[in-house]
Image (cartoon, rainbow over all chains, first blue to last red; front, side, top):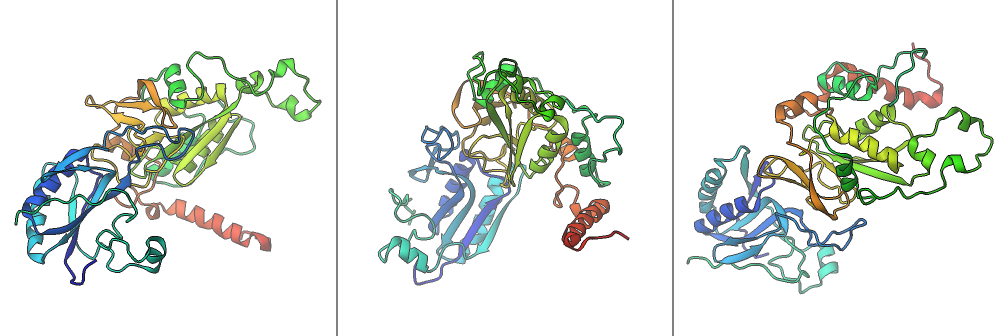
Length: 158
Length: 261
């Protein structure tokens, strides 16, 4: 949550993505540069069975993997359905569209790049009540700020 | 299996509609129509997926067999023949399904109707995204086999899920499988779907193969789900709409003693 309004885009595919497709897409996006914040959204893949008779037992899931993006390892915790990006300026958008087209050219489903506001721009009263006044505004609205383990920082090439 | 008695006062119609979806629904509900068998699954496989007892183990009982216990003098008990499971005093156990909105061959309401017409001694529970059916364990295994082997199930778009059912309304995965947080069934390299966990998410000792996912064309021809995007739209089936509107009007007016013109 910064003072300036940066352009945001959302990359939404018609299917949930496999970890290797996510890796391919993200590496392509990282090459383009100009990304300030990135969030992977989708359905949660918990490490243990959350409820039911098997509650608490380990939940091995083939899509809960560590992928390598840029120079960092990223532990996937969701089945990726959309990627939200915050950019330095709008000039990067055509390159992102091109990259997405390139990655999804060989797939038999489509993927769209949408422009708009997808990240929370102001903390709400509920956020204040839940997380207090000192919550990290960079990640508020993207993930739970109380979550252990901060964001993965991928160094830019500037 | 039930059969419709010939001396019934009316011939059941099972459902309205002129679309293929409506015809598929009628076909599944009508106990005189045989469901197409799509795959072979052994009895042991079913027991493994259900996860209620170890394969080969005796059926635990909830009460002594009916033959060994004193039955009260009840006219209803004289009319109704007990099912095999009830006769031997089995426990009540369940199977639960989640059906993807992307043209799964069956869906919760349809399952309940189908089961009520086809099976005896069952207690189905219908929810928006899942459908559970409870009955005596012995009967359950017999019914489950039919539910899994026939055209009511597609390995990719139907999930046998006792808990953590979320996924029926989500996008499919890249390989065409319905989302499952616990990934009970996995699509192998050879194109065959295998259950690696039982319905509540406990890993199985051996994978249970349930065959190849059915193709899009088959699914669209056999689905019982109206879908305006890519399938047949509900609004295009005039007869269905008319019927539902009639029922809706009648039940709304019910308190005022409706009389049809």
